[in-house]
Image (cartoon, rainbow, N blue to C red; front, side, top):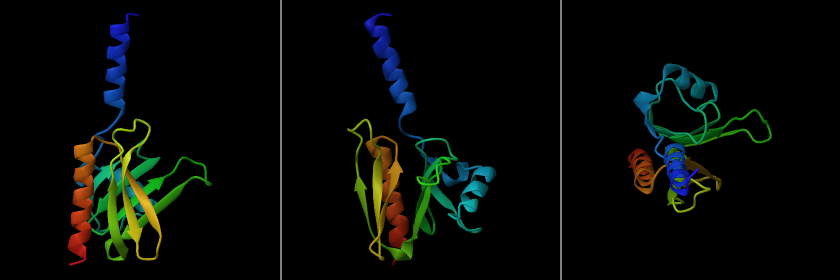
Length: 146
């Protein structure tokens, strides 16, 4: 294979395997919503605003709703599986960390909770889209604390 072909295929693989998988809440299917409810991360009348996943939907989810910000990792290894969330009224602050220049890591929103805990909600997208996710989650949080 010629070097130019290898480079072209590498660029194609990189651009299709990374980033911009963020979906609007109304793009989430009924079965996906049911799965998130089974994980205890969504109430009956709660609406997802934006959702991102770094793997299959069943394994990874990072999202915010009209009531909370949440994430999950479920890959059938109980010692690694987790679900984490915080309702907006329990969040002290949000911080955005842009990791777009680091190929091996996704950007994230760090959520600081008023019980002194914190967690990360990952966003695997370009800088603009990741920052938009952060700004919209911050706006939801701010509107609930006015």
